[in-house]
Image 1 (cartoon, rainbow, N blue to C red):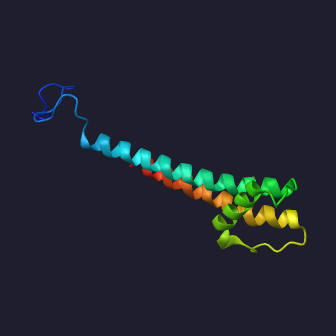
Image 2: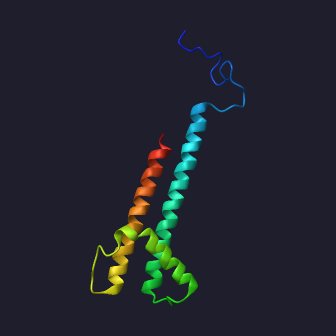
Image 3: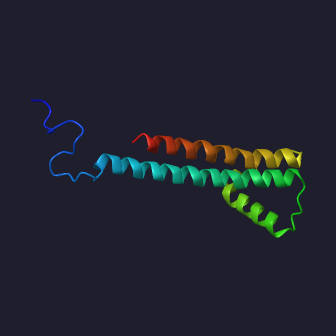
Length: 118
């Protein structure tokens, strides 16, 4: 006999009827972790895009909210500051903050897809 299970579809010996199998539990944990990573990446990209939008629309940089968004965007994009040195300020901000936003989304979603397949 090649199938040691008593009947297909029923739980194996030593396993409670409602207990999920270990693989299913691990798969659920991997999906939750993937969702968390994806969410963090999306939030980071959202702050960067929000700062680009506020800067391009000429928001008051003395405002507390605008200062918070700018500070958060600076923390998230510290590694890409002044990669592009354009004469046009709007284009410089778009490129220097847009590149990290794009990379955060691509890397975060790539890791999430990889974890979901486990």
